[in-house]
Length: 115
Image (cartoon, rainbow, N blue to C red):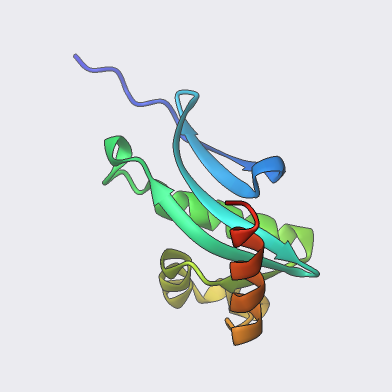
Protein backbone atom coordinates (compact mmCIF):
# COMPACT_ATOMS: atom_id res chain seq x y z
CA UNK A 1 0.00 0.00 0.00
CA UNK A 2 1.41 3.42 -0.95
CA UNK A 3 1.59 6.36 1.41
CA UNK A 4 -0.30 9.52 0.47
CA UNK A 5 1.86 12.34 -0.85
CA UNK A 6 2.64 15.10 1.62
CA UNK A 7 0.48 18.21 1.29
CA UNK A 8 2.22 20.86 -0.80
CA UNK A 9 2.93 24.20 0.87
CA UNK A 10 3.63 27.56 -0.75
CA UNK A 11 6.04 30.02 0.81
CA UNK A 12 7.17 33.47 -0.26
CA UNK A 13 10.97 33.72 -0.31
CA UNK A 14 11.51 37.48 -0.55
CA UNK A 15 15.30 37.16 -0.39
CA UNK A 16 15.17 35.11 -3.62
CA UNK A 17 12.30 37.11 -5.20
CA UNK A 18 10.06 34.11 -5.62
CA UNK A 19 7.29 31.95 -4.27
CA UNK A 20 8.22 28.31 -3.74
CA UNK A 21 6.05 25.23 -3.57
CA UNK A 22 7.42 22.48 -1.34
CA UNK A 23 6.34 18.87 -1.16
CA UNK A 24 7.55 17.00 1.89
CA UNK A 25 10.04 19.81 2.52
CA UNK A 26 11.52 19.44 -0.97
CA UNK A 27 11.44 22.32 -3.47
CA UNK A 28 9.06 21.25 -6.23
CA UNK A 29 8.65 24.51 -8.11
CA UNK A 30 8.81 28.28 -8.08
CA UNK A 31 7.39 31.41 -9.60
CA UNK A 32 9.87 34.29 -9.73
CA UNK A 33 9.03 37.97 -9.47
CA UNK A 34 10.48 41.43 -9.21
CA UNK A 35 8.74 44.27 -7.42
CA UNK A 36 8.47 47.70 -9.03
CA UNK A 37 6.61 50.21 -6.85
CA UNK A 38 3.14 48.72 -6.33
CA UNK A 39 3.56 46.06 -9.04
CA UNK A 40 4.77 42.49 -8.62
CA UNK A 41 6.12 41.45 -12.02
CA UNK A 42 6.05 37.66 -12.48
CA UNK A 43 8.65 36.61 -15.03
CA UNK A 44 9.24 32.86 -14.66
CA UNK A 45 7.45 29.77 -13.35
CA UNK A 46 8.75 26.22 -13.27
CA UNK A 47 7.96 22.87 -11.64
CA UNK A 48 10.52 20.08 -11.34
CA UNK A 49 9.80 17.21 -13.75
CA UNK A 50 9.63 14.82 -10.79
CA UNK A 51 6.46 16.65 -9.68
CA UNK A 52 4.83 17.16 -13.09
CA UNK A 53 1.15 16.44 -13.58
CA UNK A 54 0.12 17.11 -9.98
CA UNK A 55 -1.35 20.58 -10.48
CA UNK A 56 1.44 22.17 -8.48
CA UNK A 57 2.05 25.07 -10.89
CA UNK A 58 -1.60 26.11 -10.72
CA UNK A 59 -1.65 25.89 -6.93
CA UNK A 60 1.61 27.82 -6.67
CA UNK A 61 0.42 30.64 -8.93
CA UNK A 62 -3.02 30.81 -7.30
CA UNK A 63 -1.50 31.19 -3.84
CA UNK A 64 1.08 33.71 -5.10
CA UNK A 65 -1.60 35.86 -6.74
CA UNK A 66 -3.77 35.66 -3.64
CA UNK A 67 -0.79 36.88 -1.62
CA UNK A 68 -0.31 39.79 -4.04
CA UNK A 69 -3.97 40.77 -3.53
CA UNK A 70 -3.59 40.56 0.26
CA UNK A 71 -0.52 42.79 0.14
CA UNK A 72 -2.34 45.49 -1.85
CA UNK A 73 -0.02 45.16 -4.84
CA UNK A 74 -0.82 44.62 -8.51
CA UNK A 75 0.11 41.75 -10.86
CA UNK A 76 2.08 42.09 -14.10
CA UNK A 77 2.15 38.72 -15.94
CA UNK A 78 5.35 38.63 -18.02
CA UNK A 79 5.59 34.86 -17.39
CA UNK A 80 3.54 32.98 -20.02
CA UNK A 81 2.21 30.53 -17.42
CA UNK A 82 0.98 33.31 -15.13
CA UNK A 83 -0.59 35.11 -18.12
CA UNK A 84 -2.42 31.94 -19.18
CA UNK A 85 -3.57 31.31 -15.60
CA UNK A 86 -5.01 34.83 -15.44
CA UNK A 87 -6.96 34.27 -18.67
CA UNK A 88 -8.80 31.43 -16.94
CA UNK A 89 -9.14 33.09 -13.51
CA UNK A 90 -10.86 36.44 -13.94
CA UNK A 91 -11.05 36.99 -10.18
CA UNK A 92 -7.62 38.65 -10.43
CA UNK A 93 -8.48 40.95 -13.37
CA UNK A 94 -9.06 43.92 -11.07
CA UNK A 95 -5.44 43.84 -9.85
CA UNK A 96 -3.73 42.89 -13.13
CA UNK A 97 -1.75 45.45 -15.15
CA UNK A 98 -0.66 45.00 -18.77
CA UNK A 99 2.89 44.14 -19.73
CA UNK A 100 4.43 47.25 -21.26
CA UNK A 101 7.73 47.82 -23.11
CA UNK A 102 8.91 49.88 -20.12
CA UNK A 103 8.27 47.02 -17.71
CA UNK A 104 10.09 44.60 -20.03
CA UNK A 105 13.11 46.92 -20.33
CA UNK A 106 13.28 47.43 -16.57
CA UNK A 107 12.97 43.69 -15.92
CA UNK A 108 15.59 42.81 -18.55
CA UNK A 109 18.03 45.33 -17.06
CA UNK A 110 17.45 44.12 -13.52
CA UNK A 111 17.84 40.45 -14.43
CA UNK A 112 21.00 41.10 -16.47
CA UNK A 113 22.69 42.69 -13.47
CA UNK A 114 22.29 39.35 -11.67
CA UNK A 115 24.33 37.37 -14.18
